[in-house]
Picture (cartoon, rainbow, N blue to C red):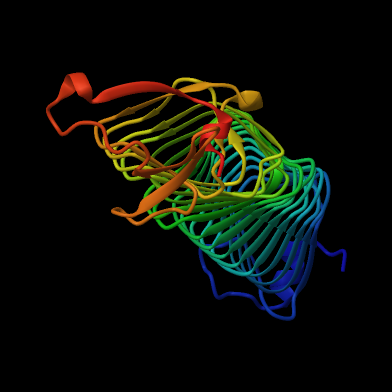
Length: 395
């Protein structure tokens, strides 16, 4: 119907909200297409279409029915708590968007204020530009492309950041709920997973560090990581076609790496952190391995480390395959101090014996690989540097 909205609503006898200008209830069909519209709009049923090139100056509330915001400029906020809302392309939204229920589709447009999602379902589709922060504390949000020029914060619910052409220009923080960062998106700032948050990273390019802390968990199944992975708690697991270009820094938590495409940079393990590496990394160019505190590195596969690798305090390297050597099997200096230890071959229990094949000398039986170095307090004897070759460490 092309009547003015006001006449249509008067004929419908609508009076339930005395302080509202336009109310759309079940059974109403409203089409607003005038140039400037200064009244507030409440939609809790029926169907409302707010068409192109109009300017809406007041707040719009949608709690039911079917609403289509098809172009135009929306100067004040939009609140969606139920029904279906379609915010279509070519629209400009100057006020905040708040979604606590219903089904909202943001199909492009320019969103100049923040978006808050606490319930319902929200689909932020391709071609949209989001100038301010996006917050998800409940419900389900799909960020299917677009340009996100401010922070994304996820503290509950679930969020999928999926688009191949999406650009996320500011930090993403996941402190609760779950998030999936998939396909070929470009993430230009830090990714932080903390609290009880969980994130799956299925591809894309990550320019800044990815950090896991608390009880957070991150599962990396693809992508290029151009700065370090940082872990202080929780779990970080990576496998498959993934390139880690700037190493790993851990002060706690557990890191599991399985059959990676590339691992470069330095690996630094402190505190009670644990690193587990399984299968061979295709392009393994780690320049330095440091194991300190009570940290442990479990190595299953063939790995080459550079001279300067350090094992200190009660840190341990445990190599099931027996390969811990310099590039091309060259000699390498390891520094072991305090109660640090290297195990090669079958990973032993604390008091077990490990067997090491030394070229030309048969078998050397050693307890904790050349034993432990010095008791506490004997600083002069606590550090020992000695050359090892590939043959000396290969079973």
